[in-house]
View 1 (cartoon, rainbow, N blue to C red):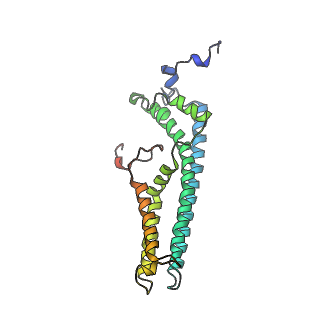
View 2 (cartoon, rainbow, N blue to C red):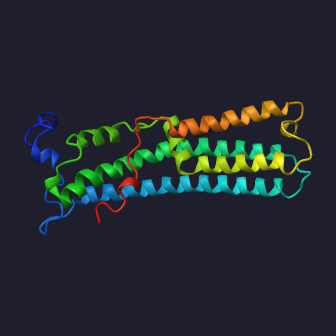
Amino acid sequence: MDGESTKDVDPTDADHREIGAGLLDEEMGPSSAVAHLYRGEIHRMKFWRERLDQTTYWAIVVMSAILTWSFSSRENPHYVVLLGAAAVTAFLIVEARRYRGYDIWRGRVRTLQKNVFAYGLDPSAGLEDPAWREKLSQDYRRPTMKISTEEAIAHRLRRIYLLLYTITLGAWVARITAFVDRPLPESAAVGEIPGIAVIATVAAGYLLAVFVTVRPRTWRAEDELREAEIGKHR
């Protein structure tokens, strides 16, 4: 490169930053390297998206099987439903770990979409992030998780798992009230554990899930579909 060091390149230079300029003009198209890079990141994102769906699928299958068995006979113990809730929690933790990985690939895809393709379609709107090249380069050099486990759990609770917990809780309440002969809280007892203690533990766990889901926070995950803006750009 005529002896010019890469360190001499000004990251704020227009030619350096605006890789999307003229991208979709008739005379131009996306460079082969960028196109292959984007396609590769789409493939990775799709693979991790499928892993998320598999975890959710098995959580629903396990919960459905346990609820079906629990209500198949009045003699079946009610605490099996709680074991189902514990299994759903295990799936939630696994899915949160996968979601953190999925966010890495989705973040790269969205970076390219916002700063290359969106800019190529409408340069007048400007760049989403003028420093996106530096950030993406650093991410390739040293990939790191972008969101915490707690935020990933909150995302999955909002999407599906809080609903699964609500269904499980409703089924358990019905199981210890309408399908037993003993009164509350005695009907909720598990072995030597008093019913009131079991009810308090279940209620505390559910309220914790609700708190994690709805508490105010600064979301670090890459932006998802904005449901509040339905139909805005049509």
